[in-house]
Amino acid sequence: MVKRIGIAVKPNHPDGKEILEKLVDWLHRREKEVTLIDITQKCPVPPVDMIIVLGGDGTLLSIARLIEGRDILVLGVNLGSLGFLTEVAFNELYQSLEMIFKEKFLDDSRLMLTSVIHRGGDRYPQPTALNDVTLHKGTISTLIKLEITIDHQFVTSLRADGLIVSSATGSTAYSLSCGGPIVHPSVDAIVLTPISPHMLTNRPIVVPSSAEIEVTLKTAHPGPIVTFDGHESFALRMDDTVHIQAFQQRLKLIRSPHRNYYQVLRQKLKWGEE
Image (tube, rainbow, N blue to C red; front, side, top):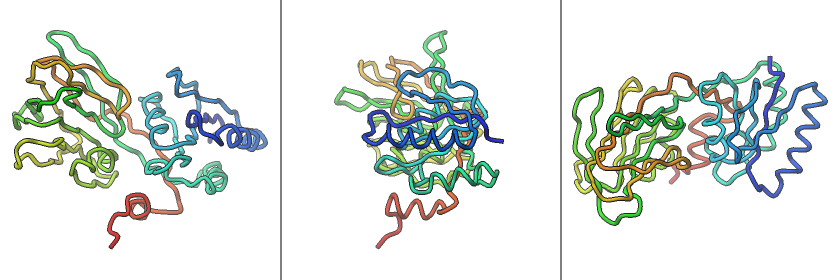
């Protein structure tokens, strides 16, 4: 039963305060406990049964990192521009909540990625990512060299602007803009997409979600970084290895009952339109 509800609002949204006040009042009248979550503070989320995300995909990605490893339902309500992950329209919010309180909703669990950076004998655990882990050349103007292994088997040496390692959810984010495939989020897979590779033969590859991926930087120039969902970042050095694999806990998104995945592709990305 959903009793304790957290609410996260996109920072500085012009209508955020008014929307929040109305929603909190509506929930209180239904005897729900409400906690406001400030994603800018990066504080631990208190015990809740569900989080309502009012904003865009960036707000939802921030919440996904804050609740990593916890069994919390997440309802994404679009107040942004694209809203691919926050697929519930604002005018559907209260109707969707009524259905959730009756335990009539669609659970859309999403695979997340976890990473550790190895530098010499040191380990640097990194935030989980719902969309992608991206190694990028950063501010330097030359290509970087990356060595990729999967399940301890050498795959390739890549000269490129970088590499995107994405979940199926992230296949429609940065990876897509770099020529990666669209992968249905129910598919247990990880996608490796080169960013502007030097060789035409370096194409994206899809591997099982059980794969352990290691990417080692073989460029001595300062500047390369690794980012996690485009928010958190870590500066890389020569011979740093980024170890990436599926996180043991999935994010429990609540799917909109008003549209399916292919409708979202057509509406949000204009996929398949003539």
